[in-house]
Length: 146
Image 1: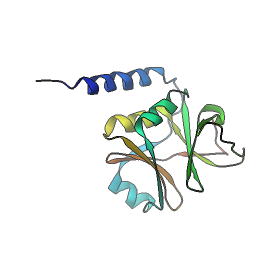
Image 2 (image 1 turned 90 degrees about the vertical axis):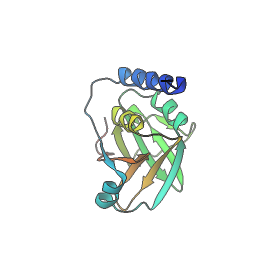
Image 3 (image 1 turned 120 degrees about the horizontal axis):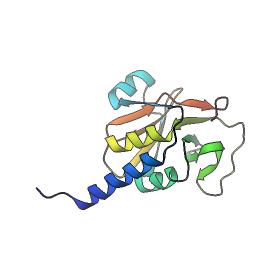
Image 4 (image 1 turned 120 degrees about the vertical axis):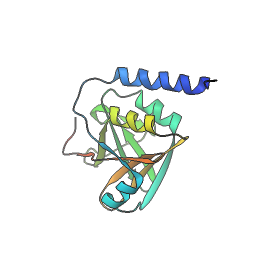
């Protein structure tokens, strides 16, 4: 049986990402897309991010990653609300972001396949979808920021 070398490299990369995650409170839960639609409602707005770009952003934070869609633009923060994406963006300290554990985002990426991750605004939730799975049960930051 021939094993695809790129899949092996990607698997090793994910293992490396998991090994760099510190022990911290885990925030987020993965659902099937159908379950997420039933629990959190339909997607109102979806902003895509390239898988490689998201992996690059994940490498810039240790424990947590935060997402927000503002005026059609995806903004991503890391630990301590450090702006990771887009570079040079300014964010109001009072602006609320959906906070997830880095480990849960990596888990989501390991379960799916494809080249694009969708950050989705729903009625009162912000979700992250990759493949057939959706991540939610985030914490709002502020008030809960790690």
